[in-house]
Length: 188
Image 1 (cartoon, helix red, strand yellow):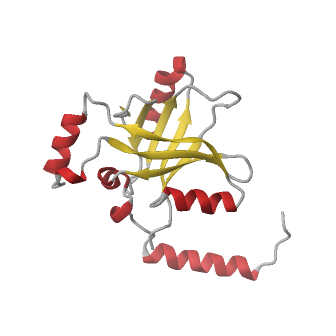
Image 2: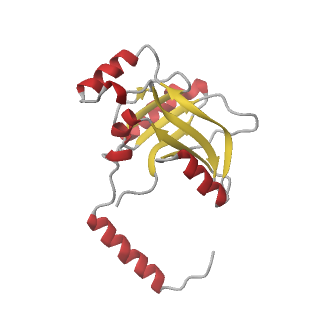
């Protein structure tokens, strides 16, 4: 069962002067070397941390006035318009404008070559990673919605590459739900 949205990136923010030290900290924790992103829009170091394409990143960017540095999740969605509408109807609030993550011109030729070697057609290759929109949930927690370009779907395991829970995980979850429903708990 594939999910409607997919957690694709967990972002830890860092001050400019601490970006390298913070990246080293998480690189050591996970035991994997981090890489720089292919965009100059923000300064991000990242690494894949699961078989389903989930990434962990350390980011430095200019903050909006009054914004604080907080960790936040990035969720890939198939339709940004629909996701924004559904979530605002449930008490979410959009922040700022949508923004694209362009692939840096210096790495675009290599990106194109790699995509062609993977069997992608020229028409399937984009010069950006995708489009994003920051939001808050009803409690004020920041999230980002992300509509990946088709050539980013393979990397993030989104779109047609999206993985779901295994039959074993679903069966166990159904048992957990049944157990929870059988126990009356006071509302928190």
